[in-house]
Amino acid sequence: MLVITRREGEEVIIGNPSAPLGIVRIAAIKGDRVRLAFEFPREVDVHRREVADQISAAEKDGNPVAGQIRPAAGGENA
Image 1: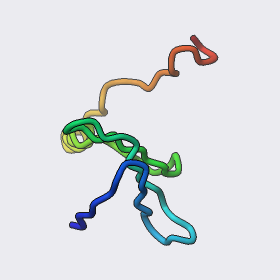
Image 2 (image 1 turned 180 degrees about the vertical axis):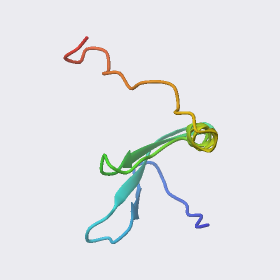
Image 3 (image 1 turned 135 degrees about the vertical axis):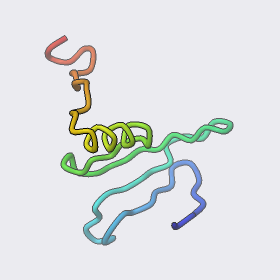
Image 4 (image 1 turned 60 degrees about the horizontal axis):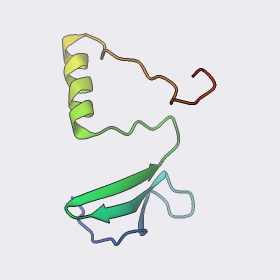
């Protein structure tokens, strides 16, 4: 495991620096909460741990994860 220190606005490059797979940016720090911004291609899945655990458990059970992604409010379908 790599552990590094970053300040608000700083980034971590994932993969080859000249053609990165993705970028993780420290968007904001307020008290004990840190906001991260992930910039990856759409085909790369990025999940919070609790969601990843649900997906893993569902795959083991053979059940698809319930739920559907809906357009954000104010989108063309809103």
